[in-house]
Image (tube, rainbow, N blue to C red; front, side):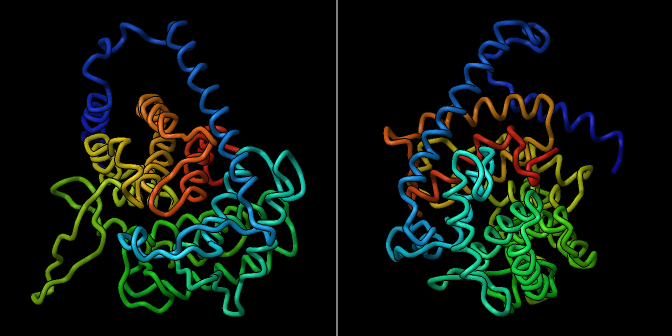
Length: 365
């Protein structure tokens, strides 16, 4: 990376993050009033996450699963069908882990253990973790959950299933270096690729072998998805008839996915990361969008991970704004809601609020 460009980019990031009404840099510093505000917000976030976890505790099915809509993107509202959701079950359990519970241990140990048993029962002979025709999104979140459990507990009943699910991800990577909805697809997209990368990162952290060439190919795919003009990341590589890559759509969630995928793959210093972080500050979604989309919490989930990994002033400003939005969206019963369903949105919102606690190895700096 060219060292001369980095200070300028970081300055641009900080300027974009500072609200128009904020005091000039250095005028407030780390004075007592700032720390009091931070502590109050932190406590509000902790209590909100606790209320969300209590909601999830009450909505868990007898077999350990959680039910929400299983569908395709914009079709969630109209065609999504309720089913026992592998992805949502895994995210709910990750939210409990991020609070500090483990299978059979801690405040939500019973819920995590039941959820774990459900996920283990859904691992197919080829390693694919799926129910009700769920796809690679859910498989990746389930693999991430198994990896975090195995890394923290060393449970033998998890190890073999985890190795099998990781093997499925490795085999499902296509020639572009990315992943798509189903194993064996010949195309790929950023939103699915990031899930697989983070699952592989967690598995490798837990001691499961992940081939280096798989990670290298994923890095190439993500880098090539960067849109130089906007600084964001594209949904897919689209190759025209002349062989030239055409630009597909670039959005906030996809950019959050791209930056987090590079961090997950072990890339921390890269101009495309700096450009992506600037893009995220410019295109931050408004909180009212949460109820009318399927990807608000998905985007915030990855954007908050990216901001936390960047750290410093970028994280300080990011998490204040994000927590304020997330807190305002919580329902009286402790839940959050979007087009996928309350269990999914609640699990995601809780994890977003819990990332700084660093109970999960995948969130550690």
